[in-house]
Amino acid sequence: MKVNIRDWRDADVGAMHAINEACVPGVGALSRADFDRLVCDIGATTSVAEIDGEVVGFVLCMQEGLDYASLNYRWIGERFERFAYVDRVAVAEKHRNQGVGDALYRASLARFRGKRPALLAEVNLAPPNPGSLRFHKRHGFEEIGERWESGGEKGVVYLARDLTPSAGDG
Image (cartoon, rainbow, N blue to C red):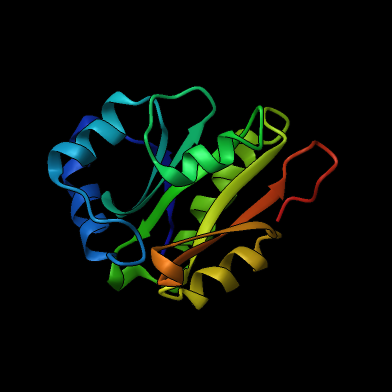
């Protein structure tokens, strides 16, 4: 099974939205209109993974300076002048644990290496997402902070991966 990573196209958005909604609560739910705005209008860098021509996953990355109201994006923007932030990565259920997420992250690391000092992400602590935390640790991400809300009922940990040219390939 060969995973092909490429930039998204307009024809991919429906499949990407369906994958996004199937991955809730690991990623935030979005209406189709909000998802279209996120992918098509904000200026995110989006890559899709395809197998045999079928979109099976995607990664959506934000850089500094975008018109994006996310609390996580704002938290990162207050602490980093330049960055690439993985807003969401999602893989269709039947293709999980087959290297699709790894391929998407390797492509993102390669795309931003030397162009931004770090690739940043956040992972839910409450409700917990231990699989995502293990995934990010495996790719060399380190914890840089936490944010809690709703009296401690919701929380995220922020993670960073060094992207300076001397950093490993991971």
